[in-house]
Length: 592
Image 1 (cartoon, rainbow, N blue to C red):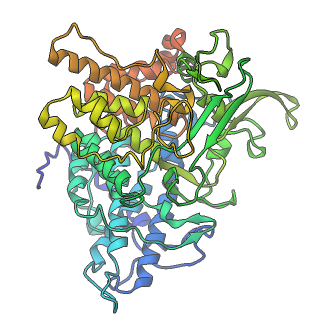
Image 2: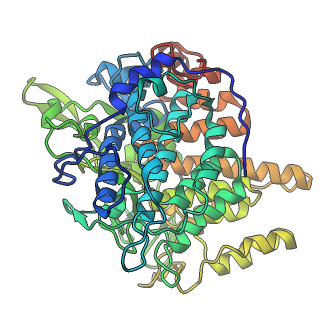
Image 3: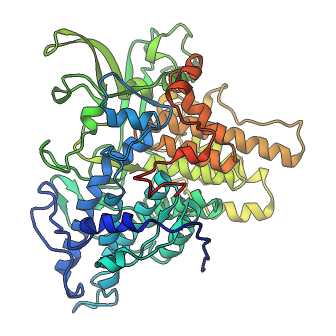
C-alpha cells in the first residue's frame, strides 16, 4: 500500500545541519554495563559479517538509552496521575507545566535523530539476503530489530513534537543535512511505518544471551506490538486488535499461551478488620520466560557519573542522591480515582463482602496505588527537618521498563472496543477471557459476520483458565481490574455499562464510550508512573475530537476543587491541540 502525504511546510535547514555533528561518524561505543566492547558503526563498507550485526544493534541501543528517561517523564508529568514536589528541578517543573524551554535537558530532538540516523545507516548498508554456510540468513533478525527501533523513535518524535521531518536515508554530508525533508504528523507517521514493518512480524528476535543479569531479548520491540500501537493511533482498530492478539498468541508458542499474569494486591481472606494484605508478583522482574510480564526495557548504567545512568529512581523515590526529597509524587487525581473504586472481597468461606467506606487513605478502594507507592513522614538527617519519605516500587531497577504484557491486554481491549466490540473489551477488565467467555458471553450479542471475525481470537480453555471461588492451582486468567480491586467478576458494582432505552446505533455508541472510560481508568490504576498516561489522554481526545477531554483531566491533577488553580499554573490553553506539543528552537514543533 502506498500513501501520499500533504507537506504543509519544510523543516528549517538549520535543524538538520545542527544535528549533523551528532549524527554522522558517531563512535558506537556501548555503555560499559551493557556490553564491554567498542565499535565504529559508520564505515566505508557494507555490513557483511556477523560481528557487524551485534555491534550495530548495540550501537543503536546505546543511543536509545539517551531517550529512556524522557520517554517516561514526558509521558507522565504532563498527565494527571503524577505531580511534581518542591524538590523537583526546573526541567521537571517545565514539563509538568507545559512550558518546556529550548535548553531543557529533555528537549533535545537531535537525540532522536541520532537513533534514526544510525538505523538508516544500517538499513541502507545491510544485505538482508546474505546467508551463512548453514543456509541461514545472517542479518534478518537485526534488520527487523532496527526497523522496529526506527518506527518507535519516529512515533515518539511525532507524539511529542507534532510534525517532524521524515528522514529515511542516512545523513552523512553537509549537503544531505541541508536538504528539505517532508514533515509528517502522527497519522502520517503511523501510516508510513505500518507499511514499513509489514512482513517482519514473525521474524525471531536475536538472542545475545544474558548481559549483566538481563536477557537481551527484553531490549527489543516486538513488531506485532509496534504495529498494534501504530494502528491504534491511526484508527485502524480491527488491525490493531489482531496485532496485539497475534503477539500474545505467538509470544510463547502455539501450546503455551500468554495469560494475564497473577500480579495483584488483595485484602487477606480471613482478615475482616481490613489490616492485612497479600500480594502476588507473578512474572515480575527482568528475566525472560513464559511468565515474564516485561516486554521491552532499555538498559541503564549502574554508576551515576556515567552518561546513560537513569535518574528515574532518584526522581520517584527518596534516596541518598536527592537528600531524601523525591521529585515526583502521586497526584490528588490518582488518589481520588483509586479511592473511588469499589473493592470486592472474597472470604475463605467463599462469601462476598465489600470493605467499609470508613477506610481511610490509600487503603480505600483499589489497592494498587498503596502497593506501589507510599509516602510517610520521616526525618531528613542532612537538613535536620521533617520530610515526606517517598517509596515507588516501580523504580528500583537501573533499567527503564517501557512495555509489559498487561499493557498489551489493555490496548487490545481499547482496540476491540473501538472496533465495535465493547462486550469483549469489558470481559478483559472484568473476568478475563478464554474461548468459553468469547463464545458464550460475547458472540451472542453480535451478528454472524461479527461472530466469524471474533472467532479468530483463540484463547484455549486449557491454557487460559478462569479462576473460581475455590481457587485452583492451574488458574491463570482473571480480569485486570482484579489486580487491585479484588474479585471483580463477582462485583455487583462493576458491570457492563448499557442503556436499553436507546436505539441500536445509539446504544452501541453509548457502550463504546462508557467502556472506553473504564479502560482509561484501568490504564491509570495499572500504569500510574510508567509514562503512558499523557499519550493515552491524547489518543482518546483526538479520537473523540474533544480537546477538552485531555485538558479537563490535566487541569484536575490536584483534585476537582483545585482545577482553576491548576489552570492558572499551566498558562497554555490545553483546549488548543497545538499546545499539546513541545517546540524546539523555533524550528521544530507542531506549528513549524
